[in-house]
Structures are given as C-alpha cells and as structure tokens.
Length: 107
Image (cartoon, rainbow, N blue to C red):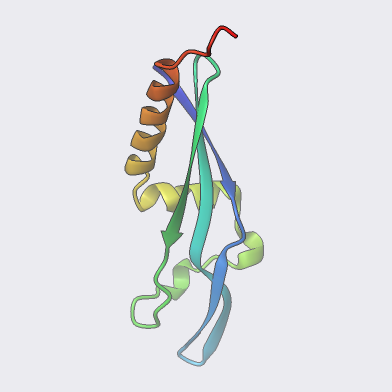
C-alpha cells in the first residue's frame, strides 16, 4: 500500500547562541509538526510529533546555520526525517490499518 505523506509545522521554539563573539538568533531548538499519511483509497491518518535540536556552542557547526528567514518547508522535512520519522510512519500505517478494519453502522 503506497502512502503519501504531508507535513504541517507549528510555531517552533527558538533560542539565541553566542559563539566566538557572534550572536546567532532564532535557532530552532524544538519543532512541533503534524505528519499526515494518505493511502491509495484516500484514507488518511495524522500523528503529531516534535523534533529537538541541540543549541550548544560546543556542538554547533556555525557553517551549517541557516538564517531563520531562509528556512524552507523542504529543509524542515529533511531535518525531521533525519532524526528518525520511522516510528511516526509506523504509527500512521497502524492507524490506517485500523480504519480499514472498521465499518460504519447501517443506521
């Protein structure tokens, strides 16, 4: 069964970071999202999740910082999938299977 996924992103939590004399504003530390899977029959199921990102001057790679204004939906999806969306995909698949096994009452 092929499932098409879409994302909706909610307002992220942001932090500032001072590193080697520079201040980096609006770095995303937590990103809440709703991932929806729709199967070939048009049945859909959604799961809400959160992605957490370390904002720490020890671990930060300043060359990889993307200014907040330059973030795209595709980049956020890449980040969320990079931290492991397999569990969320499995939950969506289970919810879709449950919907397939229910039937409305005839009245």
